[in-house]
Image (cartoon, rainbow, N blue to C red; front, side, top):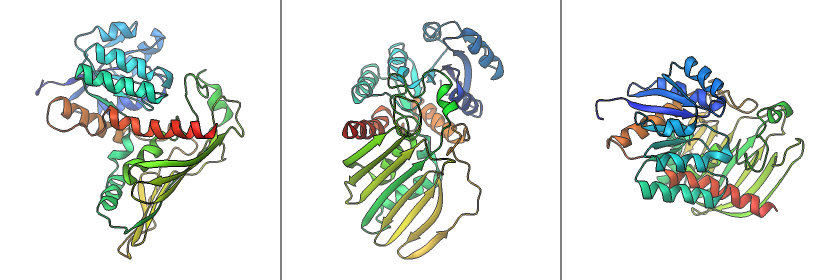
Length: 335
């Protein structure tokens, strides 16, 4: 396998699958072999678009193909846990889109099956592969900002009513699991926890202000981190026209402000390192498709190297649990 390409199959041919296909195509040691979808014509169109060899009539057919090494799961969120477990038990490695599951119990089931089968599973948390987010985490770990006072996350996004009307599953409790947090904001929650560490939930509130959906379109949470910092999470899909995601880490000796995944301000030991960033930053504040595939590619590359024994898998199933646990705790506290 060291000199061979790793063959991927993509399950689910909706919007996010395009990012996976482009990421796989960008890697020299990866090959998109085929795709499957509940609609065979959509799988055929997707396979043709991305130059894949096969369009499978069913997920079972793809799992039965011995040429497939990795399944990339891009189905609606409510299917993620069961799809992942089926792939692991079929002796496949897995790339699993966020969220890994809609409940803590299902997330733990995925972890257990990974351990039982010995197969590798990475949950898409691509922001961790951003250079500026990794730099900020290193500075926090090194105590560069002194005693941390606040670790805050703001995700005031906009999703139109038409967005939720498309697809049939968006905004439902059964298949989406949540709105502003579980679906739209989970990458930000994961990035905050990655940078600042574990946090206990103090209080939370969520509701539905605008959209005709079963899940929240605004939420707020108060946190206390293990490092002593206080923190907040603000999330919405009802703020028009939407603002870029912001993470603010503030301490007695400095601070870091991330706009999307780019450092906008950095002060270390009272010395200003970055003060404003003139670079135009693409974000998903009002368009979930407005992102590149490059960070997905870095994460998938890490999985390939881990399969070959060349690197440690950086984001495994247990890491994927962290944001799911906090978000479900927020929902419980909001009831």
